[in-house]
Image 1: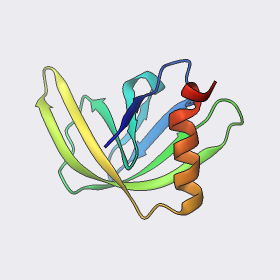
Image 2: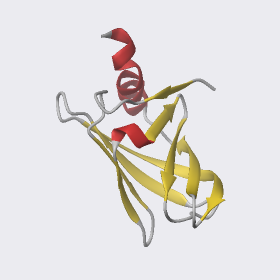
Image 3: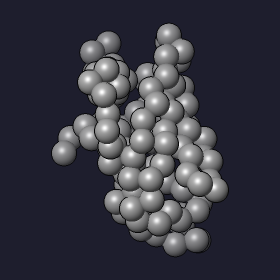
Image 4: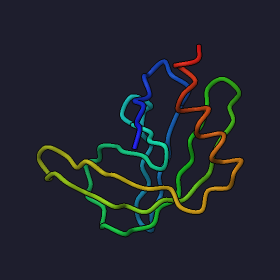
Length: 109
């Protein structure tokens, strides 16, 4: 699985994740986008197999990508924070193309 860390000057402006009782707004420099998923740090743990909705926003055109994902790993503790790994589920071809553009835009520029 390939990964690309999104720098703070990169193509994402904001990442918002929502689960039943949780809503996180993440800065672009705290997110790593993979070909089929996302990783981030959180002060709160998430249950494995929990489904979440995500919105990734681009600063350039303000475009947003809405998608769902499932937590496949949550490691860490309340003192150091938690490392969350998720896989995207049910991505449309259009959403997949947009995510690829967002993830690799700094490499092309």
